[in-house]
Image 1 (cartoon, chains in turn cyan, brown):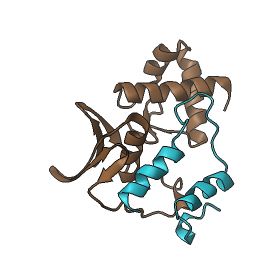
Image 2 (tube, rainbow over the protein chains, first blue to last red):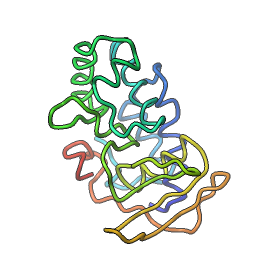
Image 3 (cartoon, rainbow over the protein chains, first blue to last red):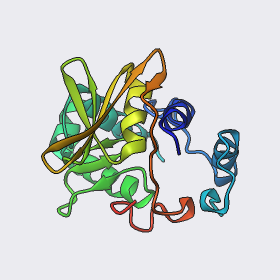
Length: 47
Length: 144
């Protein structure tokens, strides 16, 4: 993964993570985020 | 996660951000106003849910992504403040959370690489290498 993608993915992946109200994403929701950044290979499949 | 877990988890992040490298049960009790035993139970539950990782003695947080409570090869730096990250991705994630700065990746005592994030743009180009497939991240999170 290139470093810009790592940063851009983090902006979405970790948004609201510090909040008490943060709800962990489901596998399906996390997969949508990976897909959005082109992480669509078998390596990035969560289930 | 119950209400106490939410309070404790958020306090873990507050303390990491404030510069506490690996908040202890007692740090968290002081931060939250909860009893130490209550914090200890919550930490065990949060660890079981993979929200964080505890020390062998289970009384100190050593990993709360993206922060690391132990020194690693990856640091995020904003001005004079630095944070240990669990991996290359996490080093960029800390900056994504806290603001522009630098990622420093070390190999032994030698500085290997430095990346700068300014207005969300990372320079120079480079790669973050993952060795464990996403579905297996938590099989051995320290390896991941």
